[in-house]
Image (tube, rainbow, N blue to C red; front, top):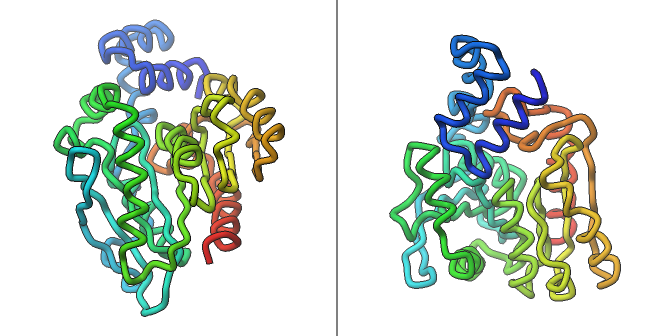
Length: 285
């Protein structure tokens, strides 16, 4: 697909543009409203493809939970392997569309990899993630960020309180969640590993606070996010922080999201996932 269209969609999902303005500009690129409407289903996520691990998979157990947040009750989705042993803990952090079927599926994938996984709903203070994605993006933009960081940090307290926990914790986040993973690395000193998929970088001045091993996955065509890489890497090196940085050339932002057909890249997603699981195996078990 035309990269200009993909870049426009990225602007729509992250600035965000109004839907009317997005469609107006998409129509200008494609040449007609009919062409724009034909392209639109190829750009937007399709949750029919979200379930790669069935909800009723007999290898794992899932549940809806709540835990105390910062002046709110946080909602979350938990998945864990069956068995009586202790598991490393992983907080899974959603994109700017909230806790949706895709992220729930990712949480089940993390459980299948051998971890006690929790996906908090960052929109819990506003009642939870709505079905309408535009509404979810608008709600994300209204969150109080210091409180939101605390709400995700408290997810580790919840996980460590569970009898299945081995008290070693990490996190993985995607897009907005990738930025949050970087923030949790700064704000949670006993975090063992933080994995950020195409996430905005923290302030360089905060990097010396990071004690976790940081693993960073970036898309070669993602100019918006990649603009912050050099300063982040320089700060990581200067602080002596353990980190791994991977660039996947020729792929777009959201390359791991298999419900986003024009941006998903199976080869890059598979390699990035394998690297993430190895890091979690090395640090959380």
